Length: 219
Ligand code: CDP
Image 1 (cartoon, rainbow, N blue to C red):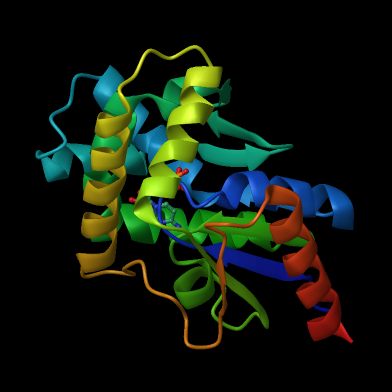
Image 2 (image 1 turned 60 degrees about the horizontal axis):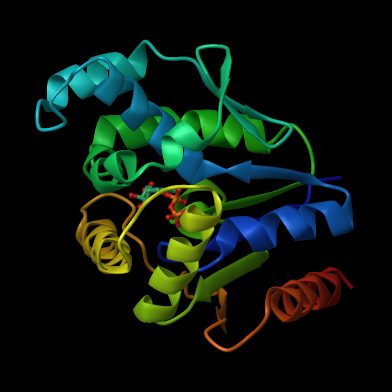
């Protein structure tokens, strides 16, 4: 029997990772954060002092990197990374790394390989359109840009980062623009994805709605 693959796509800060982790726990399946893989490559480039505009150097770094996602943790060359990939510096560079076709191709292979290991829920931008286009379980999670900015700001403040709300909202809008206008695998709702606007929904309401839909689709 085919593995269960649930795709959760949507713009920055829509709550995809929080929701996906809870659904994974409820259903007893694995969770894969595809964005963390782009963030890990970006982090490695920045640490190596590479200018992200130097596309060939970014591709070289990417192709000699080992990225994996196991037990809710992103591994970069064998080391588990945490909040260092969530900094505003990584956030403001990641979309320019993610629009490089060779980087996308490299990570696409990894994501498919990891996704095929077990029943999974993956969150990202192109899970339902490119990584697993044949899955029947596709959701597009959205919320207003202001609400998404507010949520991300609160999340980072809770983690002890010192930030300004306007900078977060600007980063989110800028990434949405780059992500949805790039040539390869842009951020777009798959025709057959179920759209969920979470602007005025609680986390538990979204989790329940998606879990119920998954069960219904599977019947
Ligand atoms: O958590 P947040 O929604 O802010 O972003 P993320 O899921 O960590 O993704 C970071 C960035 O990686 C996005 O802004 C995209 O540029 C890129 N990404 C992508 O291109 N394709 C994916 N499947 C996932 C992320």
